[in-house]
Length: 70
Image (cartoon, rainbow, N blue to C red):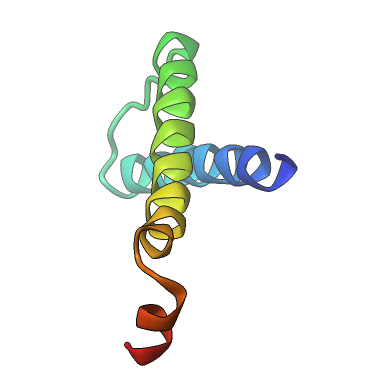
């Protein structure tokens, strides 16, 4: 459980850093309200969990012998 949570935090931090760098390079004003950062973290977590579960569930639908042949 800690792996995806730390990945979510890392992704959120990288997003904030990337946004800050791009806005600094283009002389833009950066506005990041926590109101938007918190839902982004939640969406990021859901996408990460689904991305991990889908490939793990695919092999469960086929017979073990069939999986070895592929």
